[in-house]
Image (cartoon, rainbow, N blue to C red; front, top):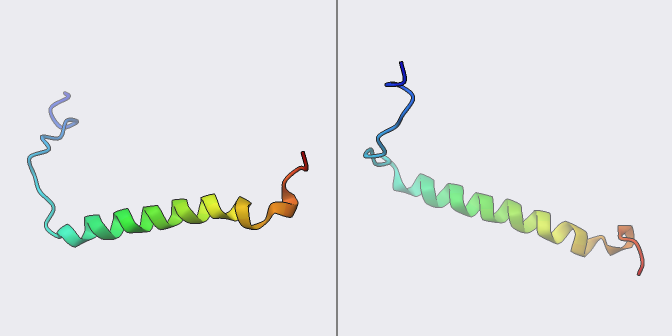
Length: 47
């Protein structure tokens, strides 16, 4: 029943550049999400 639910993890990716592309895209998105509140400081409540 559960034979097909587990993945061995022994397979390697066929295109290693896709890992680098995915990692850089995720870092870019996280960086933009961090910078948005720093750029638009007028929306933050004043202390």
